[in-house]
Every structure is written in structure tokens, then in C-alpha cells.
Length: 541
Image (tube, rainbow, N blue to C red):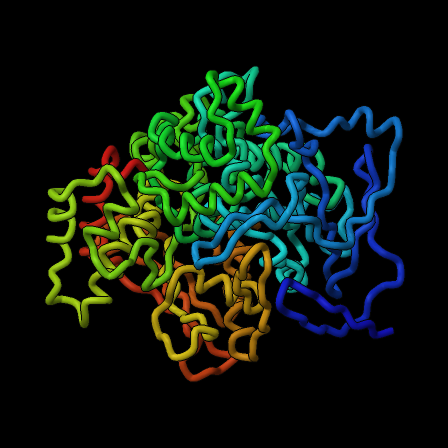
């Protein structure tokens, strides 16, 4: 029987027809039974599966509490896992919108598995961490049903984690574990990985073969997991897309932002303990309103709630830890888009000073000297390249280089296909690959999103990308299970003779011929990125 499945993600309705088995997929984890849905012919989706206790009331700004599976076993229940759950509370995207949608009870995962997967399947696992600047993001906007449908030999998990002020409040009292925790949102991700270790086998996955993947803030999260001091060997490979190389401030550097929050929530009280107690009782709307205002109007250099150096889990700047060899040492894919930047205001000194509060005019002058303006077609391209390398693109060179140095499989890419929903804009901007890999996905306000779908040429190209990614998940090499039409992806080396893969669709719009090519790593890229790595204490990333 043909059944029509309608997927609604905020602003979009996509209608897909296919044969669906009449009996829904069911998984018994030992402590609960989850009933999912057959979202594609080869895919069973289990949506909104909890991995920790709800972080409500006194649990706000504490490390996630693991599920009490022993108590759950004694009263085993069946849960509906056929629909996407409430996403974590959203902040503003920075485009004039207000955040506030979502729920604090959001510590869930979405699991996509082959329909015939069993506890004995032992399939490799991809765990995906979404982007959104640590401020916003809804995993429903990055669905993986079609990935598993294309390659029904993996299990994929996408993670919901606390965002913005709920995930990354930096208050000195939170350094005391009896009071709370810094970096709660990052600890959520770690707890999700622990849950995967304990329970993914019930869904057909192999806990000993987990690869983590993320884009933008998700790519930054991947980098942070690579250098986290509490490394528990929760994964064996990493894919980092467009690593968001945001400054990692100290708690002290976030104190001006904290004062702003306290003032705007009426929690300016005599002691830190009283302040935390007051903030835990504050409404979601009060906290989000203050956070949104701060992001757009706060005059201080540090105006967003993001991960901080907590001296316990995140002990130093990621660049220093990576360069000194203090990282997880796993195979790596790392890349960026051709024209992305995260601090392009049209003026290089203003852009870089706003993004990196510690940078000096001398640093900026030295950095821009590596980018002679007369080598660029126009001013916009010049500004984008200067700001793009330092904020995003050099994450590729950093991760690719340290993996290559340690004789680990290392693969780098430049994504070179514009997002077609941007009209005639030929620049390949930040998150362009998300559109292609996730059925034409664009993120909207407050957790909404649009899936516009792909044409035949785009579908063929997306299948190449998915095959590379899942080949790496299965074998630590993107070539092992690549599509026959896709060229071999060369290993990366941090030299001018090293190569990276240029990911782009066939320019003649053929569906049976790949447009992907390899290119030499430009020596100018290496030189510029090497210089940024000497500025770690200034850039704080």
C-alpha cells in the first residue's frame, strides 16, 4: 500500500509517497520500549528519545543527570517516538528576530536506523551535533532519513543540547559543582555520547565505532570534544565542517555580560548563590529577552553565551591543545566553504575587533599584510577572505594538519557549490553544504526551517556527499564506499604539494558524471593560517 508522508518543518511541507510496512518499528532498550516510524523504505526513525533527565528547576545550569534506568526498568513503559520532540529554547539568529520558542525539557536524541537493524547488527554510528552559534538550532531541520535510506548500513543520531544562556551561562558560582556547572550545553553533548555508548546497540549500532560530526557551532563542538580533558574515548573519528572559531573566553571575561543579565532579570543580589537561585526561578521569557538584547545591544566585547574555559573540561584554547598534541587523536575530515565568513561587516578592523575583543591594531595590520588588496577582484572579496580565514576556514588547516602530523587518516575539502535558494549569488557561503545534504534545508527563526527539495542534478551530487561521509563513518576513509562516479579523495598534508577535495556538482548538470575534483593546497592559505595559529592568546580560539 502506498502511503503519503508529510514532513512539516516550520515553513515547509514536503510530500513523499512510498510503501510503508503496517507495523511500526519498535525497540526495547531494557528500561523502556520506543515505537518509531518507517520514515523511508529503508529507514526507521526514533524521534525524541531522552538521554538524560529534564534539566528543570534546580537542574537548570547543572550537568545533565543521567537517566535513572533502574527505576524505569521497574515500571517499564512504551513511548511514542514517531514525532520530532520539542527543541531546546532558541535565541535570536541575529536577524532582528526574537528567540524564546522551545522547551527546557529537550535533552533528547533522534535516531535513524535501517528498518531491519537488530541488537546483533553492530553497525557503525554517526552522531551529529547541529550548528547555530550555540544560540539556536533544531535538529529536525537536518533530517537523516534519506542518508540511511541511501546507505542502510549505519545508525545516525542527532543531538539536542541546551543553547544560549540555558546552555552556557558563565557565573563564578557555577565553578562549584555543588551549585552548578559551566558549559552545561557542552556537557549535554557528552552525556548524549555516553547514552550512545550504553544503549545504541538496542537500535543496531556499535558503540565502539562512533564518529562525531558537526557544522559551524557543531564543528566547533567537534573540535572541543577532541581536546576535552575528560576524554572518555566516546568516539573513534571526527568530521568537522566550517569550524566556528569563536573566542573561548574565561568566566571572568563574561562578567560584564553576566551583570547585564542580572540587571535585566532583577537578580542583582548580594551574593552569587542568591543570584543563581534567583536566575533559576526566572522565567524563560525574561532570560531570553535579556540574552537577545545583549546580543544586539550590549556594548562589551563578549556579548554571547558560548563555551568558556572552565579549567576542568575545557582547560585551554583549542588551538594550543591541538598544536601541543593534547587531543583525542582520531581520523579527521575537515573542511569549509569557498567564500564563508562570520564577521564580514565590510570593514576589516571593525569586523575583527567585534569578533575578537583581544585583537590589537598591530595584529590586524600584520594579518591583513598577508592579503594584498590588489590580489582580489573587489573589496568585498578581500574583506571576506581576510575575515573568513580567521573565523572559519583555518579550522580545516588546523585539524587536517594535526591529524596528518600524527600519522592519522586526514582528509580536507573545499565545498564549492552555492546555495541555489540565494538566487544569483554565486558565492559559496556559510552552511551552503547543509542545503545540499539535507534536502534543500534553510534555517528560519525560532526553530523553524524550510526543506525545498532537490532537483535531479542536486540529488545526484548530494548522494556523492553522503556516500563520502558515511564511507568515513564505516571505514575511517571517504573512499572505501564512495559512489563509483566519485573521484578518489586524496589524503591531506599541510604542504603546498598536499591536496584537498573540491566538492561541487557537475557543471553540465549531468547526473551520471561527478563534478568533484582535487586541488593543491594553496601555499598562501597555509601561510595565512599558520600566522593565525601564532595569535592564539589574542584570538582565544
